[in-house]
Image (cartoon, rainbow over all chains, first blue to last red; front, side):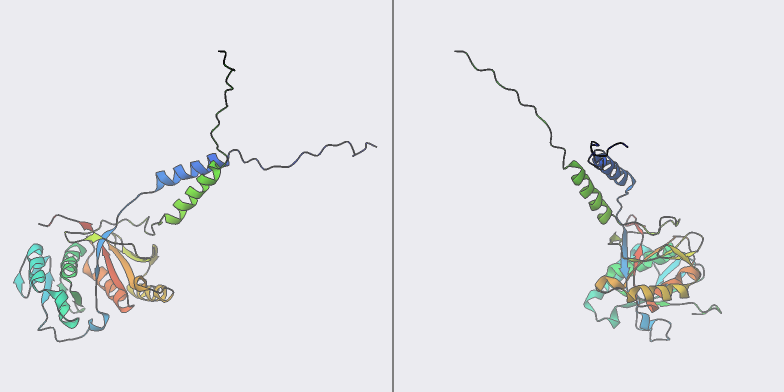
Amino acid sequence: MRSEKGRSRKPLSVPMDSVSDIAFLLIIFFILTTSIRRVTGFQSELPAAQRDQQQTTEKMPSVKLHNGALTYNDEAVTPAQLRERLLQLKLPQRTESERVIVLEATGQVSYQDYFAVMAAVSQAGGAISIISESKDGGS
Amino acid sequence: MKMAPRRRRDIAVPVVSMGDIAFLLTIFFLICSNFTKEAGIKLVPPKAPSVETIKESRISVAIDGEGDLFLQGQPVPDARSIEWGVAALMQDRTGPEARLVMFKCDHQVDKAVFEPVLDAIAKAGGTIVAVGDKSSPNE
């Protein structure tokens, strides 16, 4: 029987030579696959308590969207004119309840038109109260 | 006068810590990266001149070009599911940004689709952060 005595034991070691290469490859992967983008938009206040209520909207400024046509207090305006009118109201100086702008959309209205109005109200410092169209066609 | 021969030193760049540095960089990229939840959702965002750069919020609701609804990148059947989902997601979070809900919607989607969703977010107590691109001031 062969003696075990003379056998030399090799020290076990994990090969670490290529670790830095792997790590750098990971970094290159992250750099190449990452797309740096800036998200743009606006914060819009929709007071939940005032929605879906037959509230006293007569005194509030109202914006109406009907099949793409835009009116402000029953007067036809362009989106640029609407922004000007809303900025003239100086809404940030008013109380919370006086900052509410009524938004009513009837007929076929795309999100593009809606977004433009919401952005204008948000820029002017207002809060939006949406009047939803009922199923029978009325508001 | 005879000069003694100069001994040339072997110049070696220390690369022992290179692996550690590379891994630290990898960890940095991993932590700083914000993985988008709506990677597979196809939508064309609306445009408005008064949008600003906004910080991405943790709760996201999206409507793609076909009118399908998504909450946190996962499809949901209706606006009511969004209301419950947003309310549940807000329960787990605290702080001023907990109520912010990022809303992305295709520019052509009709109000019959997006209005109930906006309503659902408001009913859940969320503040809408509408995402869109910047357009020229005349649009």
